[in-house]
Length: 229
Image (cartoon, rainbow, N blue to C red; front, top):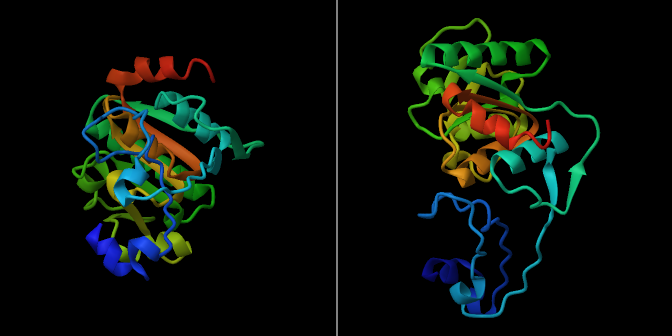
């Protein structure tokens, strides 16, 4: 708080500050591994009364991505409305038994996406783990693309939609929090115990969402999606 007080013109007592966040569903750095039902106590943090304007409408995701995110993350009904309704592609979920199969599925997905006319900069591969399947595949060769860990240049390429890059960037879900990409591929999904992190990963997708999940939780995922499939 001392740092904010120094950086903000006129300090916290007289300055103006706007904060955007989702303390209820995206507390991925808290000790609670599930979805939190408590909002951040901003008055306690800043020591003054703060007006809060909730945004209940989903503005980023397509309707199918929104619904899959809600049900898999067990937060159905969290939105009051959806901006991007209409006909959109449903998320695609594939299941693997081992890393060799996961690697094959990942590359098949990427090749299919590129064949549809998308650019490498349209694609982002996310995982709960730093030692992800994309990380393990970074030395593999493909005539169309190569895997690259997300860095500052990668963020710029994604934001600017650089059509010249042949890099498919990968990152942990936590490192990509606050960002978004046209197409998100979630990999290494082998458990459903950290719903906040899963929610963050899925909700990064603007237009298309692909999930590569372990066969061990296939039944659990299908059960979660029974209401919308």
